[in-house]
Image 1 (cartoon, rainbow, N blue to C red):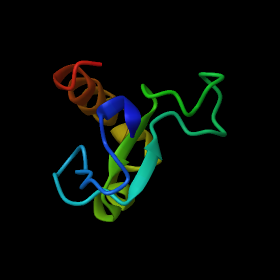
Image 2: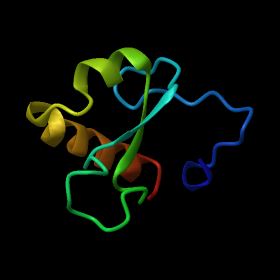
Image 3: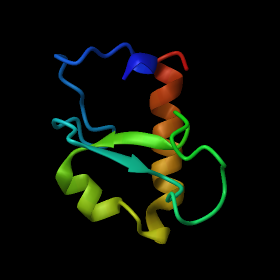
Image 4: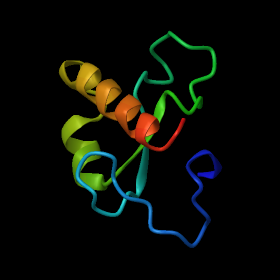
Length: 78
């Protein structure tokens, strides 16, 4: 939350649809290898429950989620 300038009281938008984010999604699943630090800001994104259920942990959406997250980080100066 600090990386994006959010406080505990702030509204955090879903990175895909803009609704209230209630889940943190690991793009590279914690149990699937890859980065040693799965909680790195480049690997976690805020999602609403609906988007998390629709896109999360599905291989066919991993590239899309990565592209959207990196765009989100770019426009937020990270």
